[in-house]
Amino acid sequence: MNLVLLGPPGAGKGTLAARLVEAFGFVHLSTGDILREEVKKGSELGKLAKGYMERGELVPDEVILGMVRERVDGETDGFLFDGFPRTIAQAEGLEEILPVHLVIYLELPEEEVVRRLSARRVCKNCGANYNLITQPPKAPGVCDRCGGELYQRPDDREDVIRNRFRVYLEQSAPLIDYYEGKGILRRVDASLSPDEVFHRVAEVLRG
Image (cartoon, rainbow, N blue to C red; front, top):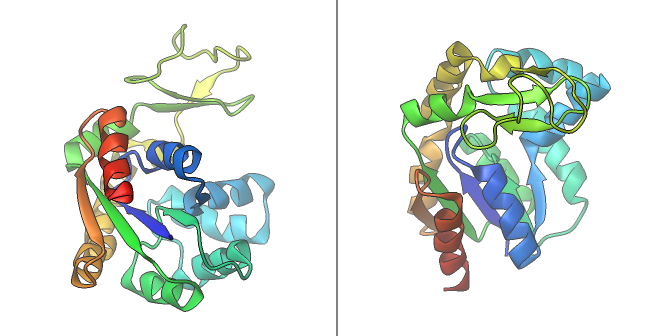
């Protein structure tokens, strides 16, 4: 089975994906994580993507699809896509690479998206991730792991988050209708606890 997780930024796609990989053995493909790796490495793809990401805009479809095709590398089953596709064009492009069997839509309102994402912090030294609401450091602004300084990523500022949500509504929300029309979309309330969200999605997968 190939599974797609849809939902606005901050809906918990990454957290849910990690648990689904452990429980069901999916190969996890997060385009956001891959892009951030490329930015950190300073690759040509990373340089191209950096400007879009810092403005909260979507990276062009052809760049994302090329990256996905490279990662899939001829396999056709067992993938979990986290945060991809984000546009109808990407969805159509993905179907040319491999079939999508089920789509989980994690529903979350804008104010909760802003609250969650603006609380994220990253260590400048070791890259450890924190959330001031759900996973705060023991000492304010200091990494538990290495003592490094914590900072807020440019794409986690409130103005950028709201722009990301606007872009999501304009360009990604039509995917809900697209996949509902195919009869493969299931809705899950992402404002519930991570455990409850996981259990509801697991029930859908087992059903």
